[in-house]
Image 1 (cartoon, one colour):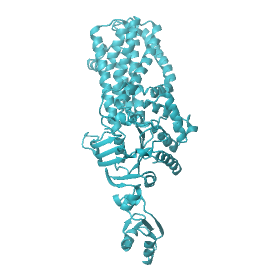
Image 2 (cartoon, each protein chain N blue to C red; image 1 turned 30 degrees about the vertical axis):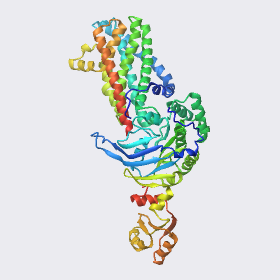
Image 3 (tube, chains in turn orange, blue; image 1 turned 60 degrees about the horizontal axis):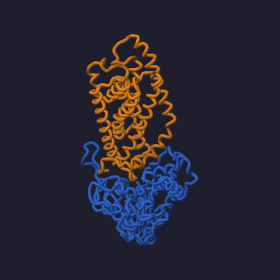
Image 4 (cartoon, each protein chain N blue to C red; image 1 turned 120 degrees about the vertical axis):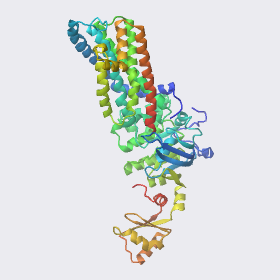
Length: 265
Length: 333
């Protein structure tokens, strides 16, 4: 479906009843886990593990406590996992198992509109999950300012989006959902552990540190942390923001191209 | 939506529109798929097809699997851009006006693409929203279409719980949600049991009677014979014959066929002994076909030569015979 590169927003909007129906099926479970999982993480990693970490002392990039250090990193990491959950298996279902995308392309909708609607839904899901995560953290007294949190919220969404497009593209390329298990083990878990959510990337060996800083998650973690803890440094913040935006956009374009190729055959 | 669109309901448009320009017009239409590895120089599925489908017509593509029917259909559906030739659908170029064309098409794909997690009626409502239908309008049409495909009682059922035939009828209902000017059906009854097939055919006849233009692909000759006013026989990506079913039979077969069954492995030898008794003799693995205008007489002559077939059948020629003649193969192998 060659032609326009930009989605037509009226066509994107026409898909709201589909995504609303999809969300109605799952929102109860997802909202529940969006509260529970963050709470468990914050309690276990932040409060309980934090006691031991804080007792030993040491540099945590200026964070007043381990809880304050780890909490913003956990939100950003959560964004990555949500992005994965909302693109990989759902995209496979829509290209292969239920072929929903094929039905959509038989209507006036074009691939660009379909990808736009899907990724906007992912952004919505990210806003809900990360918003709830930030709410759960509020009573623990780790936020330096309210405006910082309000700015951190869209940054966590952007962090998720920097994965969403690329993962969507990946999902419409592969034939088999076992690829997602491999992706989870080889990408999501290592990034989750090594992107500075749990400890400063400065403590990684040079090669691993370099790798961690190429991956989008570290940029999201660092920017979220700076905003939440209230010591924003303009230079790195602009680099983080630009990098996340560039990846989100590139991923989006790639997702359109890959889905176009996928539905062609 | 273009202003040229005629106001139309499920009740159809007047047959007076038949003189208008063709709804589908193709000249030298080609489709090549890039080879998965190199990305170029792959399979050419459609190799130069000429077509015209007039308003109100039921047009068929007949051919075995891999003949290029579905590829042609996907180009006509404005989802797969042609790689060569000329194609106009509803007077528009699918390369530049895909959305506008698809807004006025109904598509019933070969594999069901229903949403298993929505109920039957929701499937229609959600699909209607893709065409920009207002909620009330979509609801009215959904109920009307459920009635039409006899699924009113199933409106609240989950799609998962429907039988194959019901799913296919729901897919047909869904393809009609936008009051299409042209309905494309890709193998509408493949995989259905005989009873379910007849129910689908019955609904398609009604649509045809109401003046809906149908384009159907099939590899069932009975389906083509029953549904299509005019059809093309495709093989290897090209059109090998075109006409109405009776025209095709007249042009490519005889009035009658005598089918004779002999013992295993005897057919080739017997064929030589009866070659002069018919206009043409075809040897199939399990039987011998004698193409002649008078089957009974041919049969009598066969017996006069002392040959005793184990079973015999004299019948009218069908499209299957046309297909066998044109391609040397039976349709469903």
